[in-house]
Amino acid sequence: MAINATASAAKKKELIPEDTYIARCYRMVHIGTFQDEYMGEPKMVNKVRLTWELPTELRVFNEDKGEQPMVIDKEYTLSMHEKSNLRIDLTNWRGKAFTEDEAKEFDVTNLLGAYCFLGVIHATTKKGVEYNKIGSISKLPKGTTKPYAINPEFIFDYDNNFNLDEVEKFPEFISVNIKASNEYKERIMQLEGAELDKQMDAKISGEDEDLPF
Image (cartoon, rainbow, N blue to C red):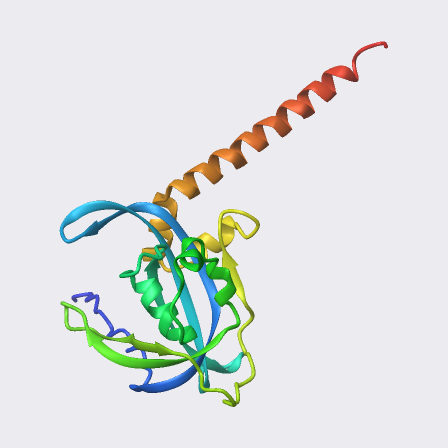
């Protein structure tokens, strides 16, 4: 008798309906500097990924958690060049152009908790898979009622918000780039060095206990 292994169809992810939504930025992941490809050529890039929740679009993804907002994210190169996607989106988001002094150094963590209008559209990958994409970002008009925040704010970076456990929780396509980044490798070296120093201090302390005075 044949014992056949079958492949069950993967559950299709529900897409956010194409529309414009009030959205809140609640999550920032600094991926770091790694080698990517731009127009077929290798290039070192420093990337960050921002995630927005749509408080008016609630779904039950997990029965234990009840209704949760649908979310959408976008990855940016950390560049405030006048033609960069980050600067273009931020200019539309705040509804005002940046001066060159303002653009010289912009802290993206300031975006956490900020609201905007997001235009969500559908796009299709080369393999024919449909997915959500941010088509536009704009400032909320004055007087717009902001929905209550739902998801807690989250930051992953290489300073005070570095956590190895969190790296393993990210989707593989994100964690792979994080682990390939210069910042990640440097942070790991720092942690390994601190552990060696700790072990050495413990060894020296143990040796000192054997001294008569």
